[in-house]
Length: 188
Image: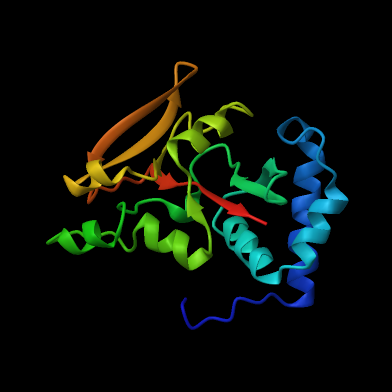
């Protein structure tokens, strides 16, 4: 994917903008006080970010605006699919974890996939912010950005929502499961 041009055709741009606008209008509770016209203008002036949003959509993330960082003048999109995005599951945490597996390696890892898509893996704080806007990951779980001190010891953390509560757990970074993926964020 690194050789791939991060550009969308005019038709693809129109399609992703239409999808994002429809989702924005359907879920106004996620972004009260934010004007779609301003979001769209920001997207249209930054086609590489639009490409990244298309990648989020293509892999099942259903991105939507969650935060408007007024100080930075940026809109922040999070993956808002009900469950961890289907196109990003069965991945271990990072490249080091992937390379440490001797057998039964997953096809990819969360950190590299996010980087190739031009997005960031959600932090635990961002994951908790997302959960204020709905019930996400009630059947799946999502890797979140792991603090360096935990990762240095071979671990990684993930979150889910059970019993109307957000839980943070740990696993070996090399582990992967069919029901665990990752959620991303993108600043535009």
